Length: 457
Ligand code: SAJ
Image 1 (spheres, rainbow, N blue to C red):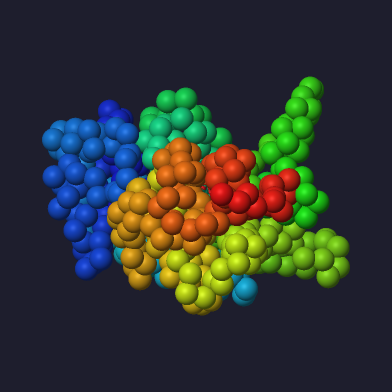
Image 2 (cartoon, rainbow, N blue to C red):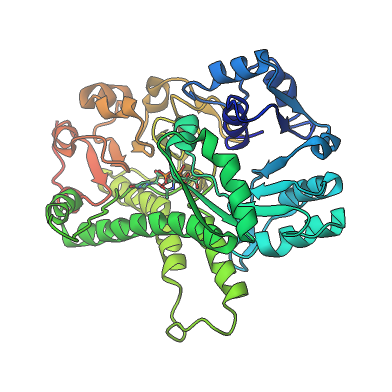
């Protein structure tokens, strides 16, 4: 019962095609509290999720949805879906941590009945559905996949803040280990789709589709981040270049220019490339034809995006040098801890490696984020004022709307410094205004401004 399972369960329960839906949740110290909340029709998810609370209240009141930790109830079901996190243990060795997923699959296997459908919604290494999942289910149940039960992969495509809409409106890739399994899974998802439609394919094709669509998004971000680094080095403005490139329109010309920034976080783009890489290593062993000794373009893209917080740190060091203030003992105000603008989601946030680097250099870091109340090991301050008060440097790390209206003279007074530093990692402020107020400015991709003359008050 997480960001994927809860909205999916509520929508299935709200569909007249289905009589009853169970949400399964381990009664663990860290997550057991969700069971009682959900059975009261309350959402345990943080952040604003339009329509979810109302829908949960409705399906609980109608007796169509119930959350339980009793996995034996699986034996009464016609279909069961698994949306369990699949992080990576070791990205260098491409080792995913499937322990939680395997535990979930074993629970299903133990209570699996002939005629049931099992669907994996988690993002998984290509080959997992027809491989590990199938083997575990057959082992635990003694039944045969494709013969006694149906098995498919139907990857989620949700984003925090719009979970219900994404499930209803995005097309759904549905891939069975055989045609019957694809048909059964199509029956399951079609009723909850409004604008979206089912796109049938094989299980492995669905696994590659999901891992590749996130890998390609990460690649597009890496491409514009690399261009931003080039623009800084060449003394030009990435946003002029982006507008220029984007202006080429016409048949067959697609321009998917994304936005450069302080880094790429979240639970998806930071790992799905490695699932894809692992997949081709396993399924493409001995058959992949690729230029010798050349690195994977996708892994290189991951490395470029992982470099951006380090680049933010180097911009800070350079700017502090220009301001004539050592980073050691300085106060750094970080604006934005969430990995995504206007969300409270902090999974794999790029803000963390930046903060760690500043602290390693002996700086004191104050973190503010309007959406994030707490984070293990990182104290957050409640107001921008408290963060920026007496700060030698202010770092914009997340694109929260609130930071778009930062006032230069107000921040200058708060910092009380002659030449406070400001680093813009999300193109949120107008550099000229801050430079006029005596700030030492640096911005991602702003080679046209990063070497500006410092204005004396
Ligand atoms: N980012 C940039 N520049 C951009 C877009 C994003 O630097 O132009 C950064 C963001 O700041 C963030 C990270 O990338 O740190 C990820 O942002 P995101 O908008 O991709 O958010 P996710 O990871 O929650 O959503 C992605 C989406 N995948 C695709 O669009 C292919 C979403 O549709 C998926 O459902 C989700 O991954 C997932 O769950 O897989």
